[in-house]
Length: 173
Image (cartoon, rainbow, N blue to C red):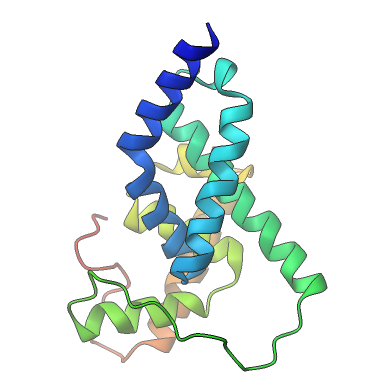
């Protein structure tokens, strides 16, 4: 039974790991942290896999674990880490970053508070419905709407006026 469970989990991870890492990157803005977030979330999912695999929406459940892991990390980092401004190695470039516009958006996204950032990423980049975002963030639909609205307004304020409409390139409204 355990071998079958492990095989199912391995197949799920093989199919979804790339998308999960991308979502984690959009949440945290750093590929190294995105890898750590993805691994932490997948570890939690693996421990509950026998229950998770029976869920109606496995992807939604895993996304919720990823977002909550990110938000928990943000709370801990705020309390425990002190930034020095020095880095041991430079930032890992996004291999898909082909335009200045994308880089501008990613920099602007990094300025948002964690919950606004999560709401904007899930609504605009992941194109998830409000109900699913509310479930992932463990909040009401109204909170999702207000966090997304505030996040988009903040992005518009950071980005050059008139250059963007508040939605990332390729995201549906």
